[in-house]
Amino acid sequence: MEFLYRVKDDRGRIQEALAQAESQAALKARLTARGLNVVDIRPKGPQSGAMGALQKLNESLETVRLKDMVVFSRQFSAMVGAGVAMLRALTIMVDQAENPKLKRTLDGVRKSVEAGQSLSDSMARHQEVFDKLFVSMVRAGEAGGILDDVLKRLAEFLEARAKLNAKVQSAMVYPSVVLAVAVIVFWAMLTFILPIFQNLFKTVGGELPAYTQFLINLSEFMRSFWMGLFVVSVIAAVWGLRTWYMTEQGRIQIDGFVLRLPVFGDLIKKVAVARFSRTFGTLVRSGVPMLSALDVVKDTAGNAVLAISVDKVSMEVRQGGSISKPLSKDPLFPPMVTQMVAVGEETGRLDEMLEKIADFYDVEVENAVDALTSILEPIMVVGIGGIVGSVVVGMYLPIFTVINQIR
Image: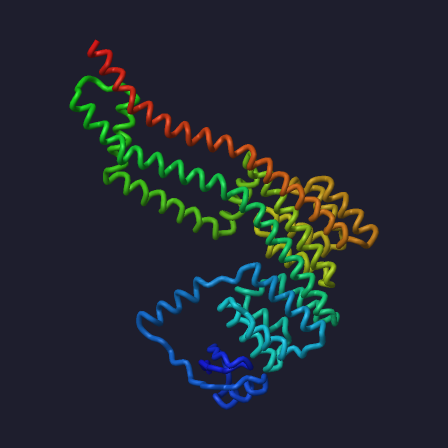
């Protein structure tokens, strides 16, 4: 059952939280054992109607950020390394978690561990928070008795992935914002400013220039029923594209198309290689078996084309082959990557080579982002100027026509 409880800490502050227990007495005994002064415990009644639906919607929209997982991994690793008992460590993490979804998930993990399940099996029941990579590394850490080291590597891996994601997002934010501003400015000028000049043109009379007439027709279209139909059609097309992307064939074709884009394709390819190298190297170093590590990399690749490449590597390894051989035949992986992987296999230091590849491509991604931003900035500025200038020219062309008529 779920209970809402209020406790008083050593400073006299009242705190309220949610917990699961077999009974009120069991929850009170558990809280008292933690040194808390229990003020009140009451069952949580199920909410119905609009409030219940709103609560379910709110819970479905909650997410656990990479930052939350990094903090959890760091703190949990420190407590396990210090010799804190597993249940005690999980209880402390539940109390300290600020993210509501992570708090509920950790409470469920703690309950499963208390019932006798292993930590990795308990985490595997919450795949929306602990993905296959996280569970596989924790399972390897449990088997090897190095759970604290594995959690520390997980935190470092998640930090590196968050840093890589931030670099890519920084490259996409600027052009997206500028493009949105350009569209809004163009729409406002055609919808509100051009109609004022249109009435003035009708009063003066005369034939309008072809370009000005085109802008007026475009303005009338944007203020008509057809514009609403066009917006609905675009939304339906985006929804259909996303639905198609959910299918296996659609994901392969769209991801392949993205990798072939002129400027962004090279950046996305470098990000994919960096993620593959970082994930694979972290799993191998943590003691995850080779085939299991390849399966995890395939599931967490984030790109269907890369997942197919990893699947080919997995098939080669199952037949007793090497990792570098199928990579050398794949155009997604540059020769430098395959050569370093081959050296790592021959020397028995594959994890170190993969880490070096990941570090190299992190720098490559950073340089590509800087170059892309420096190229896009003047292009976007000139583009906005061109959009505004095209409308202004269209509005002032009839004025010159009127002046010529007067003359």
